[in-house]
Image 1 (spheres, rainbow, N blue to C red):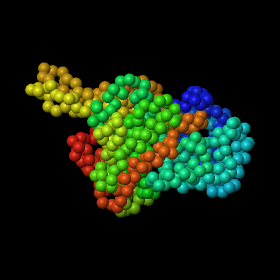
Image 2: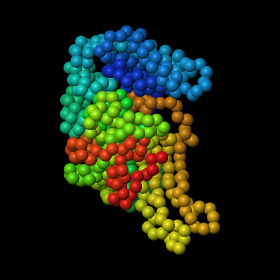
Image 3: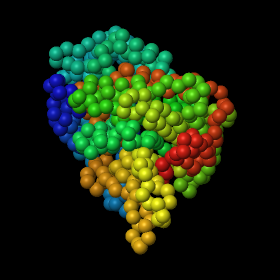
Length: 512
Ligand code: BG6
C-alpha cells in the first residue's frame, strides 16, 4: 500500500538497514507482540542482518540477560500454543531463527528523561553502520512527548538523504480531544508528520485491510453500498476477557476511550469511506479523515439518548465463574467506569444520509467476536401472500474480523418441501479455506511498513483528532454514575443496549 510517487522497495523485499530502538523494553508489548513480530519477519526473510534491535529501559541488565528473558518468554508462549501430544517441547520456537534475531538484539540502560540516554543512543547509531533509526515508544503515554522532545533536542530526529528517522507512537493517543490535540502539537513542533507513525493495531489485521480490498477490487459491492440499499450498519467488538491486570489503566479509560475512537472508528472508516484515488498513504488517510469528520455531532441530550454504558458483574464466561468488574484488582469497589459501550451514530454525507451506525464493544461478554454487520433494507414488497411465509428476516453482509475470519451473506431460501416456506441460509468466504495463514501477531505488517516508510496503515494527526471529536459528546454526557447498567459476565451486555435498537424497530445481530 505504498504511495505511488515514492521510490520504496517492493513489499516483498527485505527492509532497509535500520536501528530499531524499543523504549519500554521490559514492557508487555515488547515481549508479547514486538519481538514475536520481528521473529516472524525474520522467518519470512523481510528483515535480516541489517536490523539492529536495541531495547531501552531504566532497569540494569546485560545484553545477554535481556535476550535470555525474551527467549524464555517466547519459548513459554510456543509451548502454550503447541497442540497436545506433540514431540519435543522446543518444537514451537526455531532455535536457529531465534539465534539470528537474538544476535542482533542488545540492551541500553537509560532513564527516558535523562540527556545521557540520548547521547548513548547517538553513539549506538554511529557504531551500527547505518544512520537509519526508528524510535518505538512502547512506554506509558506520559513519556510520549517527553521522549520525542529529548530525541529532537539531541538532534536524533534530523533526516538526510542517506538517513531516515521515524517515531512510532502507541495507543492511547490522548484521553480526549484536548489532550490529543496537545500531544499532536507537541510532536509536530519538533518533527514532521511524515516521520510520525501512530499505531492502531486493528490496522495490522488482515481482515481489516481486506475490507478495502473487498470493496474496491470488486465491482459488485459498490452497487448496493449506500443508503438506497443499506438500512443500517452494526459494528461489534465483543470480548470474553475482563480487565485482567490492567485495572489501573482501565479505571481511567473505560470501554469508550479504549476501543471506540480508535479500533471501532477504523472499522467504520473502512466500511463508510469513499474510494481513494490511489492506494497510497495520503489518499487513503484523507478519505478516512473525511468520513470520520462527517460523523454527526450530538448535543448532550442526544448523546445520552443515543448511547448505553454498562459494567459487568460476576458471572459465568464459557463455564468459568468470574468476578465482577468492581472486584477486579486495582479497581475501586464503587467504580462507575464502563466496560461496555453502545452508540448510535450518523455519518452525514451523500452516501450514508439517514443510515444509522450502531457500535458496541464490551468485556466479559458471552463470546469473542469482532464483526461488521451490514443490514439491508427489506424487499420492496412481499409477493408471498396466502403462503406459509410470515415475515422475512433482513439480509446481512457480515464482515467477520475475528475469530473465524471471513465474509458471509445471510439471506432467505426456500425450505425443500411441498409448502412454500423460507429459511435463513448463509453464503460465505472463510479465509482458512483459501489462504494458509502463518502465525502472526498483526504487528508484522505495521513494523515492516514503518521500516519501508509506508504510512497508509498509521493514523495521521487529523484522523486521531476527528475520532476524539466524534466521541467527545459521549465523554461529556457520561459524567457521574447514573445510567451505568450492570450486566452479568458471560451475557451479551445490558438490556438497555437492546432497547437502543428496539425503539428503532431493529435488533443486534446475534453474537454467536
Ligand atoms: C486494545 C485494548 O487496544 O485492544 C484492549 O486496550 C482490548 O482493552 C484490545 O482488549 C482488543 O484487541 P484485539 O486485537 O484482541 O481485538
